[in-house]
Amino acid sequence: MDPRDTAPDSWEQEEDVKARATAGLQSALAALSVNAKPFIPNVDAAVFVPTFLQSSPTEISNSDGHGAEPVASMEVLETVAPVENGGGTEADMAVEVETWEQKEEPGEGEPGGGGALGGEGGSSEEAQGREEVEMMEEEEEEELPVLKVIPLPPNAPKKEHVNVVFIGHVDAGKSTIGGQIMYLTGMVEKRTLEKYEREAKEKNRETWYLSWALDTNQEERDKGKTVEVGRAYFETEKKHFTILDAPGHKSFVPNMIGGASQADLAVLVISARKGEFETGFEKGGQTREHAMLAKTAGVKHLIILVNKMDDPTVNWSLERYEECKEKLVPFLKKVGFNPKKDIYFMPCSGLTGANLKDPIEECTWYTGLPFIPHLDSLPSFNRITDGPVRLPIVDKYKDMGTVILGKLESGSIAKAQQLVMMPNRHTVEVLSLLSDEVETDEAVPGENLKLRLKGIEEEEILPGFILCNAENLCHSGRTFDAQIVIIEHKSIICPGYNAVLHIHTCIEEVQITALICLVDKKTGEKSKTRPRFVKQDQVCIARLRCAGTICLETFKDFPQMGRFTLRDEGKTIAIGKVLKLVPEKD
Image (cartoon, rainbow, N blue to C red; front, top):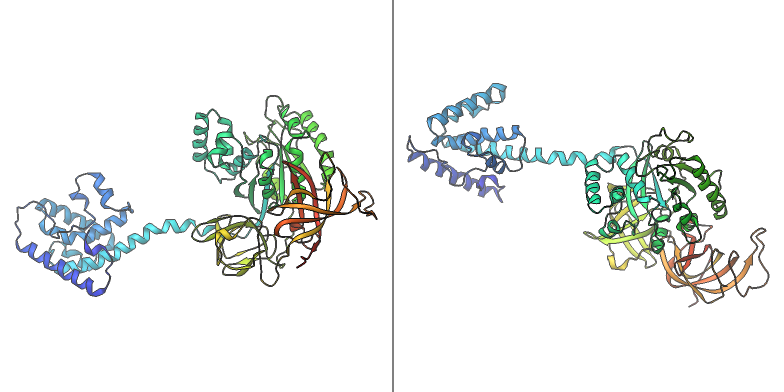
């Protein structure tokens, strides 16, 4: 490579290179034979070879480096010519003169342009200077397109962030609807989906290809079951949505609880296909459990998508749609959703995309908005922007430092801010903030964030830890009093009973150490005597003790961190809220 093409370490060195190049050129010109074959005087040839000396088109691409624009290559041609013309044949000379004249016509000829034919060593220094400038210009030109793409999102007006969790029984079509929405809003390219479709066809699973946009790992794709909570995002005119695609399988309910705890809005997907709806809704099905867990996780608004309406057994039938609706409404009412305000039903088909973005002709009886416009028209959520910083951690990993993921529940976080990681009281600094893969300087509640932290190792963080500001730390402890509703348990529950506690993003073993009193469901009166046991459908106040220290708040002060579920043997046994934190006895 020509030493002139590389940036010098020092300017003294640059002078030496120039001197050497000039000397080499002089000696080469002295021993010049007119009829000799074309040769390049400089031993280390310049990277760019003019087109008329080219032997094959492949060399052009190699020598041109990154395949810069034609204009850039012509500019380089102009500068290289003075160095190389000395040894050209007369025919070559003629061509060269033509190129120079052509160059000068547009009016970009340079003062030394006419000296191309002279080709004396003196002009080589000018050539070097020009070449360096142009090489830099060329590099700049190549880098520009990359920069154009990145700054677009931050310049757009900040849209409200809404987190939507897709829940429902296994195989109801949650991931497929998620994939279809991403395609309809332009987040997944058609080419990518066509590739997925080909791959899915090879595995005889052609109807699964849309779900592959969210189910990214091999195990999920092979079995067609979501395991981890998938994440993606899409935008409408007014809002920015994060899709949380929860697993439907009963073995992965803990993952689903983690996903639901980050959501503002839940979409319960049910399959209208004969037999599938019934399976999901029966006692062991996940439709019931997921709806209840979503309510416990603090989701206020529930949209029920009746999927697979295009199935031959259903064929957009109003009777089937109403049948599903009639069975679900009483149950959802029992869980705590208000059928008039909190619930919205709509038919759709995830595979064909019907009624997700645009209304459809086949379904004449449905007059409401399609799914995406309906999401856009929902009222804004009230967020506590001026409250204390609370960010429950969902996940962490190493990537040029410690990176954590979570949804900011209250307060706002800025770059370079000092925060405290509870319950271990580590002081950390925010190095960078990513909101849905876009870097920002400040984040407000409701956003799903990736934070790169300084001052803490990845091993020292566990999901369920909380980032707080130093002035207002969250409470942590092991013992607390809570009001519990026993939802499903065959036998009685006595003090000493062990279960798994799910509170915000934290999972911990817990023991009921004492039952304090029973609460009457209708009147809310508390019993005077201590109960010896509680059974299904009863409400009680109990004292619970965790195996380790966890972060929690009372339900009254901070609802998102005061709700919890108790699970045992793969079933949700009870839901509850924290009433009081009991200080530890030393």
